[in-house]
Amino acid sequence: MSDDALLDAAIRDATELRLTTALRAALEQKAAFELEVLNARDHAAAQAAMIGELRYQMRLAREWEIHDKNHREHIARLEVALREASKLANQADGLRQQLAALKSSSTWKAGRLILRPVRVMKRMLRRG
Image (cartoon, rainbow, N blue to C red; front, side, top):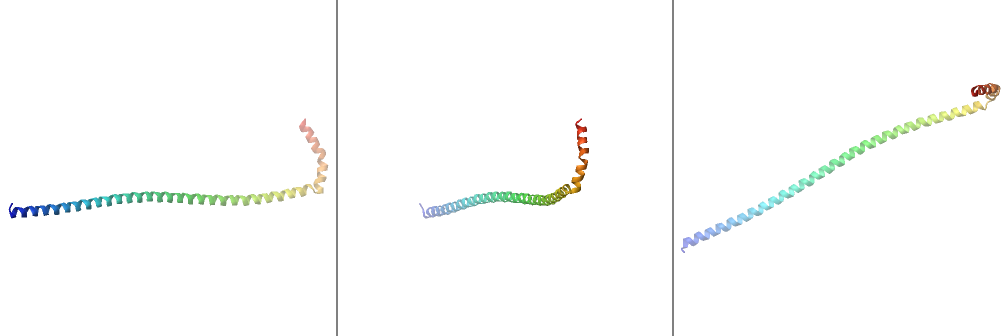
């Protein structure tokens, strides 16, 4: 072999080695990029799941706020109704006391005594 042939072979070998090294580097870079894409896809999927969970939590919080508001309004209505019932119970107690005082009065007792024969006659007529 001549020196030119040896030189051409050495140049070819060096070029082949340089191109093989560049190809390996490019393949490694491609693999690194693919890994980055996969990691980014995983991260995006995790973020989407987190967004979904946060939306669900927000919906639950809104529903709880509505429930709590309705509950508080219901309690307020019950408290109003309880106050009104208490007033009516106090009025009923007052009327019971007035009725008891009326029935214990001497005029009530005298009127009852005088009208007793009339009541007895009415009962007898109703029974037939």
